[in-house]
Length: 409
Image 1: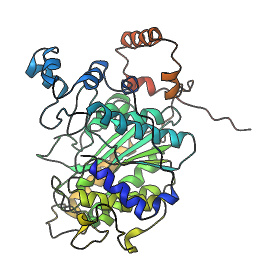
Image 2: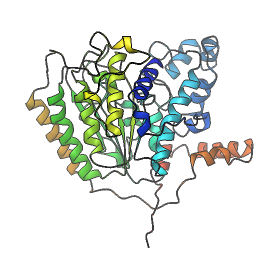
Image 3: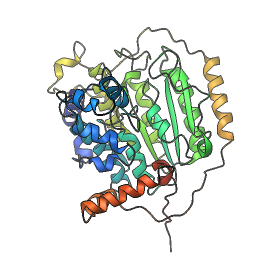
Image 4: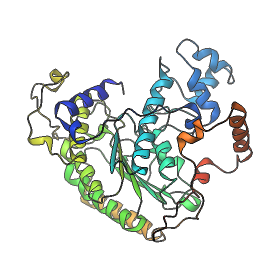
C-alpha cells in the first residue's frame, strides 16, 4: 500500500504516452470537515492528531491504552505512521475530485489509483484502510444522481462501502470476493441489505483459484441484470489488484486481461465511471494491470506495444512485458456452483422495483462551498450541533433524499 505503487503506475502511464489522451489533475486535498460527511468527528480528530510518538498518549484519552487503540482499530493491520492524515487527505481528495469531474461534465471516466480503500468504517480503520474515499465519492455523486452502482473486484469483500449504504436503495453495492476463512470474514450471499436497502447489497462469494473464464461467466450476467434493473446514473469500480494471479495475499488466478475485462464490460454501458485502486501486494503486477486498464479507459490496447523504458524497468524482469499471466492454480469454482450464485442473485434482483425513484429535493451545495463559504468558526460549530441533534438520522439517509430535477424546454 506504499506510494511506490502509484509512482510505478504513473511512470508507466507517462512513458506509454497515455497522458496525451487524458487530463492529469492534482486534486484538492480533503479536509477533516469533509471527511466527517461519513466518518465520526471523534475518529477524524484522532487521525488528524495521532503520530507514532503520541499514539499511546491519545489512546489513553479514549478509555485506556488497549481500549483506546481498539476503539479506532489502529495497530497491526492499520499502523500509525508519519503523515497518516496527509495520506488520507490525498487519497480521499482524488476520489472526491474524480466525482466532481463527472458531475461537471468534464470527464466521462475519472481514475484515482490511490483510492479504493474500501474497508474503512465510520468510526474505525480496517484492513490497511483509514478513510473511506469511496463512500465520500459516492456521497458526492448522490447530490446529482438518483442511483449509484458500486462494483468491487478486489479479492477481499468491500465491507466498509456495503455497510455505509446497507439501508438505502439509492446505492447498490456488488462485491466479487473470496469468502470463507478470509479477511474480513463478511460478504455471504445471504447478506442483501436492510430496510429500504433490502436486496440492494449483492455479494458474490467465490472460491480459491478462479480463472478468467469462470470469472467472466459470473461477472457479466450479474452486472447485466443489475444494469437492467437498477439503471444507475454513475458507477464506481474498485479494481483491487490482489485478485490477480500470484498476489502475495490473494488466492485468485486472474490474468491481467481477465481482470481488465471487467473494465471493458463496465465501460461498454457508457455510464459516467470512476475507477479506483485498492489492494494488490505483488506491486509489479498491480502496476502492469492498472496501466493496462488506464489504456483501456482512453481506448488504447497496450498489450501489443513493447514495454517502454521507465524508472522502474528492472521490476518487470526477466520478461520485461506488460502482462500478468494466469498460473496452474486449481480452480475450486465449479460451473454448477457459479450457476447457483447467478440464479440466487437474479431471484433477489427480481424483488426490486424497476429503477426505483426518489423524492425531489433541493440539490446540496458543492463540497467546496461547504468549506469556503463558512463565515466563521461559529457557523461551523452551529452546523455540527445541528448534525448531532439529528443523530437518529444517519448521514447516509440524509444524502439518500437529495435529487436534482433537470428541466428541458
